[in-house]
Length: 269
Length: 275
Image 1: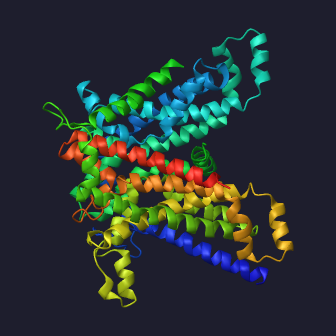
Image 2 (image 1 turned 45 degrees about the horizontal axis):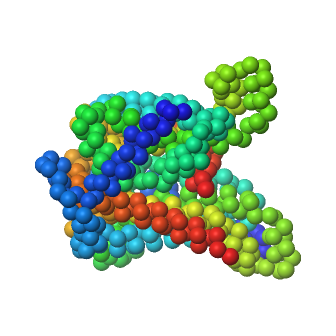
Image 3 (image 1 turned 90 degrees about the horizontal axis):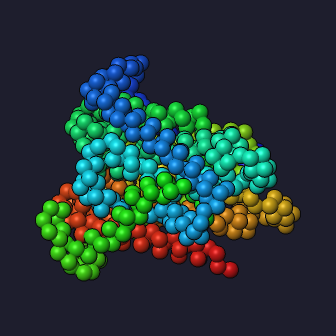
């Protein structure tokens, strides 16, 4: 087979796959812009107001605020815990490291399903169900394993001599973390931030279990909205795009970091 | 240092231990719990409805794991064989479903599979009207239809994983294969596939446990129906825990799922490290 023909075949197959991936999304975007309630695209007519209508009808302003509060608090907290834990394990060395670290990494393999039931009943007895602090606390705890794994690797990639010389200069552990280590691991922190934003924002299961009514974040509210308004497909599609938008925008800007981060997470062993 | 550990212990470790404890009791979440020993576990493997969830998982594995890995290998081979322009664009597109919220993915496909959806329109357009149906409401087709969503979501991830793996294969191996006169197919089976063994093992682990744990997609598209045709262990767990509370049973399902995930991960890693 000639090189040219091979290239044509390659592009052809890849393009078919690309269409298969994009078509469902495209149809959804088309529906979101359609004036037709059933979401059939009407040629030449683009109904931008669907977004505004969906925003009001489904009370997305409230749901998006809830999502934003949960996500920002959880991401900020997860980053702090990850930096502290990763620094402790990667640089300072912790007594009992050999037992503790595997115990923490084990957390990456424990699925939510294995802990959700007692978690719910425990939090209920503490009055933390249907409360944003409760859900944020859960996201914090569940983010610890990956966060520590990720930041420990980042800190360990720094040369040890760096810390030795800082120590000779009389820097304490916290000062070393703040002014020596942190600036150097900034790329790792950015990736962790993006991943943790995406995972928290896109969460459905935990929010479905723990949050009801006015406390529902955007993903759960969207599910409720579609259950209630099966006939208003164009508005629902518009709502779906609103809910997906924050992560999509970040993906478009930082796609390399998303992809490399998720791969590194997957290849943890 | 103690701070992250404290959060982790409260949210993950303690509930995990409690899950074990709960799983030996029958409890409706309100009145007193009664000890049933292994009863909940026995129920999981003998109750026909719960048993069927494991059968569904096997079907889903085909769609969530086998198909995406095959497609991923195909597209990886195509993308990496020659340096062609525009490959980054394909990578960007294929990975896109990974970052979409599962609820939105579910809504996108609910529409496509609906009576007036794109799938039926296409079938009508080519004169196959007899095949049209409400795909997610069909006892036979709901599960494969659901599975295809998983294929759509997962394949880009597998591909990106394999592309990363290929960059670790020494180029001399490819050169040697070409000197030996290997065509694209031979080259793929002799160099690429063995070189990607570790990545394939990771992809298998993640996608099989993903199939086992599927919740969001099922809950939003079919809720486990029609009947129990698309019920997965995670949906059964949710129902047992929060819809008609049988807390012990739910905890047992969770523990079984976790153990299965662990067993799958260990079996695959053992298998991939052999010879």
